[in-house]
Length: 538
Ligand code: ADP
Ligand code: MG
Image 1 (cartoon, rainbow, N blue to C red):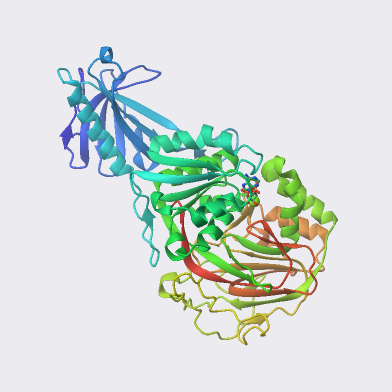
Image 2: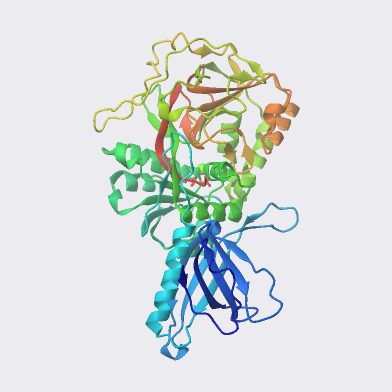
């Protein structure tokens, strides 16, 4: 154990415990009480224990769990006349109860301690402050979660981020949110960044398609899901896509559709959060630096387009809400509620043929991607198992020649019928078809509560025509809590699949991919396990 300078009147906490890494008495700066002396103990278990000294009676002091800490830095007094003292500041974001009934959310808590030994030189004080700051940073680094088959990673330090910001997304406040919320946390965490404000649609896509990515450790998107969709597809358009797509990506919610951010918040076990609270949670994940693999879905259209999607593919009701509510984007996330009410009034039926390859319940996919068991392991139609024909082992990503895209080994060309072991949905009239691969379809809608970042699954929902408006409304209200699958609605079907094909009979409406419009035409897609990486909580 290394000792700091004991101050006058110090009462000795159990500093000789083998659990204590560093111990010292320093003055806590700031209001109130000003410059109160505390005996600090830094424990192996990752806690900073603060014991008030000098005043009696001294009860147990506060404990700062360093799991909440995003950064710590040491510095000398700015002016020589301020004396020989040095300082260290730590920045924590513990959960705190919000106002009223709101769920706890991460809120900033900064503590600065003055290091000033009785006869110490300024350089000596600074060295001691640096020792503390360094140890605190080490203990604050997240542990790699134990999870079979999943390779977690940690952003390096120092860390350089490319930050792409869509000034047009959401209510148009992304730049303001960056300066007020994101930038201060990045500075506290010691993450360097280069900010690029997009000037037009596809600007981010072109940038990551052509740019030198080696200078960045992470590509951050402060926008809605649409800008991340550009980035994913820009990376997949590169000659070196196989390495480029492994660059950790990070989504910071600044748009009106922030479904991936809300999903990552949900996977981390956090309570539902929206707006600035969700942004703080996601910026906290970035500062901690943990990244995990994420599945992508490769979509092919009959006209020859090839797209990569991290969130969803849809046709019908939900896609219509998404697209029709574009004009209400200044309402932020509320645009989807307004859009839902509007689309309920103008309900349409979409005709087409849907087929899918069910998920193998035995999980015989590649060893690194076996699905995790959850509450919906089998394809089901409102709780009733759906007949499944035998299927060959799902395709494992082969190594394609350099430059060529990953092979869709589960799909056959559109001019051939789907393979025998696929399921063809007998109904051909739908209110909506929605394939989602994350839990949330928007910050307020938990559509596939069991979904994970890497579960090798497409969560396919379809709603048959004939459902009443009232039931539809109930479904969408229940989706806010993720309880829609518990409702008795024989029109709603939910099945976990590896691949699907949708053949519209007429080019009605627009389809959506990750919330972005796609002209209506035959589309098929399959999941590619763990193809990219994304900043995530545990
Ligand atoms: P939102 O969630 O509010 O829809 P997104 O980030 O998803 O926000 O962006 C919406 C659309 O804006 C996307 O299609 C994206 O390609 C496009 N876009 C990106 N940058 C710009 C820009 N500077 N001006 C206009 N559109 C842009
Ligand atoms: Mg969007």
